[in-house]
Every structure is written in C-alpha cells, then in structure tokens.
Image: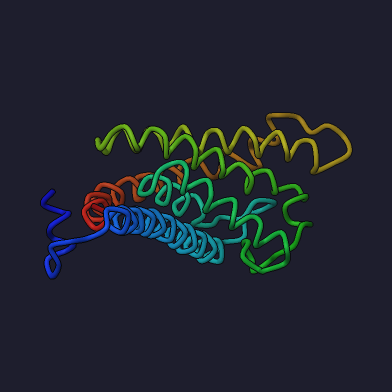
Length: 210
C-alpha cells in the first residue's frame, strides 16, 4: 500500500490496472538491466581474454600466454555461466577470423589445429573455477578450483593434441613433455595471481550489483 500511494502521490484516485502496469514495467526493466549488465560483463571479459592471448612468449608447439590467468579471473569474479559464455564468445570471434588468438591469429584453422584443444579446454577451466568460486570466498579454495580447471584444460588439450598433431600416435610422455610440463609452474603462478585478484575485487563487484 505504501508503494501504491507513492506512485500516485499527486492523485488520490487511480485505476488499479494502471498501478499493476507500472509495477510490471519496473520488474521487466529490472530484468532487462540484469541481462544488459551480464552481456556487458561477457563482452569485457572476452576482450580481456583476447588481450591476454596477445601477450605471448613463443615456446614450441604451445606458446606461453596470459589466457589462463584471464579465464580464471573472469570465472572467479563472475561465476561459471558468465565465465563459460565469455570463453565461448572469445572462441567464436576467433573462429570467424578475428585475430584474437595468440600471435594475433584467427580463423577456424587455429581451433581445428593441434593447439585448438587447449583453447576449447578453457571452457572447462571456466566451468570448474566458476562453480567452486561461487560457493566459497576462501582464497585457497578458489586457488584450488583454478588448479582443477587448468588440469581439466590440460587433459582435454593434450588428448586433442595427440589426435591432431600427427597422423601417427604420439607417446603420452612426449606429449606431456611438450605441452604440459613446461607450463605447470607458470600456470600455478597465474592461478595465484588470479585468485588474489578475485579475492580483492569480487566483493566490490558484488556491492555494485546489489
């Protein structure tokens, strides 16, 4: 009743249908704002992933990049849904030819190539990191979630690499030495950095959303 009188402060008589329509419009507008905000987060997050992919140190078949840090950060801040959507948008943009992948590359050939599995594997990183990060604020648990997500990316990407890199089967030990082992320590450092940033930034972002 208080809201009813507030909306009609200049008039004592109002059609109840008009009142209902006003409330309905407010609810719909609020939902639209939420959707627009989510889309904004996805767009910004995809851009962050792309920028981090451009920061590259060539190393064998799989280059060093900051993509892992970006994916963990995005999923840790915004959750699994937004994190996975951001990675998916990033992949789709790259697949149509926009040079958002490492080395300023783009096109479906990158996704279908030997290292494409690691790019697609970021979806699993975002999923695992986002799900666990949504349930806890403890930095060590968030860090552990990121490590599990990175491990899932390793598994998917390594299997992909073994199937695509050569027509002949490549031994697992050789594949791990080429595609995983050199990246373990750098990725742990990236996860530490991402977990720290999530710890410092997430509450501020949640306050703005409230």
